[in-house]
Length: 346
Image (tube, rainbow, N blue to C red; front, side):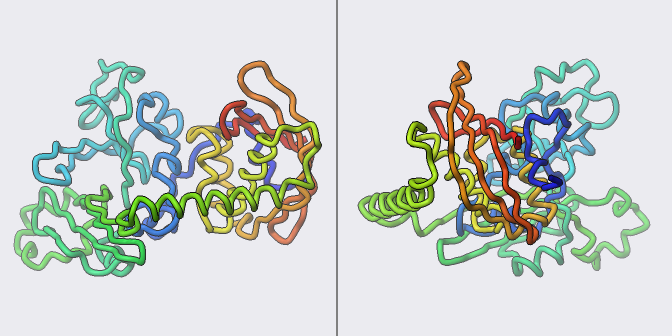
């Protein structure tokens, strides 16, 4: 069986890496910063980098950083942000310098295992004109500042509004003294978008009464439970605890939603830096799973692993790319939370 879903086998000893091809017009990335609608993944989920990881952890995933920039704080009184760039991800560490032998803001005497991630930002690779084409004219900009050009974009939708600040980086060559004559007419298209940060968010949905919010949450929860029961009641062995049935069904419901661009909650079912999450992102980016669906899910047995997790065995039919595949699957699940550690296709 050459099913590409086998790529999601987290037990395979491969050096899976998170995608580093995040485009500014990609739906996932745009939703992080330029919309307030829907279930939006965090950059930590997409990049696989989270607070507390060390420089060693980050560079095991992405290799050595490509550049480093010092950006101004997003608001008055905020400290400058020293960002180390790994493709489309900018990492802020808890140190004034990190380990490195060549370049700015590095020191060969620093111990990389003691340098920890403090924050993660998106580092765009788009021109000013591309941003304007996608998100409209900025509400504020300061492109004439050669040291710290930036623009702020306001996006509004039915759920509220959001202000996103984009700090630009400039080519050192453009600072050549011979270009002084052209400085007054320099086009904004010469600027490349760098750091992207949400600086102000006014989500109208949060302004409802507490009673309204509670009622909405309860209704949503009831619907989810009903849907899960409808999916799993007739497909579970009687000796399998309902918790594991719900976890397997919930995972695949959200996996289908992710592949079909309906939502991103599937990443709440697994550690952000797991091989499984990287494999799922790789499948998504391949374009081969855009019509993914599943059926005939039958949870057959559960065995306790003695380490706080259990192995859930089930059969499932998965369909994508116009083909259907019948699988016998083993899923390692946390005994106390709906967390999936790994999937093996037997």
